[in-house]
Image (cartoon, rainbow, N blue to C red):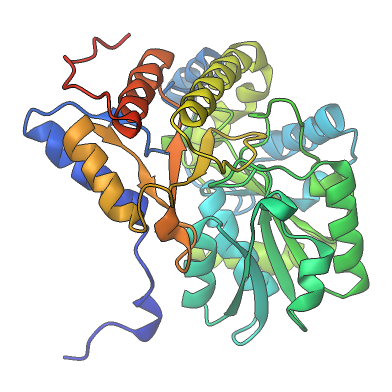
Length: 392
């Protein structure tokens, strides 16, 4: 019998390996303070849960249209008018099986095998892995503090002819966001150069001192990815959306029909209520801000000189070269000795990630405070074995 197809030989998503190691430790009775997981520690907002309960009682929960129910598409379009002062035709809204489903549909609709497409390094590894599985020639652009870990027109100029670029704003793992000027500049360059821009905006709403711009406000040719997973705290509901250019609406719909049939019906019916839950959700963001300041302050006191700007999301990406040139081993050591789970940078930047780690601060403030106290003490040589943390 023949073996697996070549396209399946992509890199693992290493954060999942860290999660497995943390789970093994917990099953053995060890404590784990989670700073590896890129998801909210809170459940869906109360209004969403109430809407789901009501839908269970009244709705058949059969298939929907492949691009989503009209009520949700219209509410998403209204969101762009309210939040970004931008008119979006609901016909351009495609409801997806999470932002990951949006990536699959967008990449297949926009790029052919052999096309050269730019991704950021460091950047979300699944962009690279999906594109490679689809036969796309991935062009990784190394980023650093000099451009705030963001892709710029000048960097695109250096890579030669490409047909696409994928960005995150705010980005995983850095938290860096594109402001209005940076987004407009990048989109103008892409429009002039006939480059398809895909902007992953799933962390928008979780932003602090530098609110990000949406590509939807700057161009009708960009593809915008969004999700209910992060700000809306609905990871397991597996629901997202994308804003498609007019010439890709039909191709994406055909792909969605064949690949997914439809997004989850219960999730769609409940998600309409999510946009009216901002008071509850903004309380989560206030906690993330507090946690970010705890992480950044602790790392600075511990001697970390290079931290990516954490404009949004719930990550701090830190250079650990003063401690090690093997971030995987460092993360394994911290899990073993401190009970703190952190993600090595090789997930996000294969060539240089051995000198970086990502801290996720989405858990409770008590857990983040304790985890960072242990890391700071370890780095400064004053660590002693703690008692178990009593969680909130």
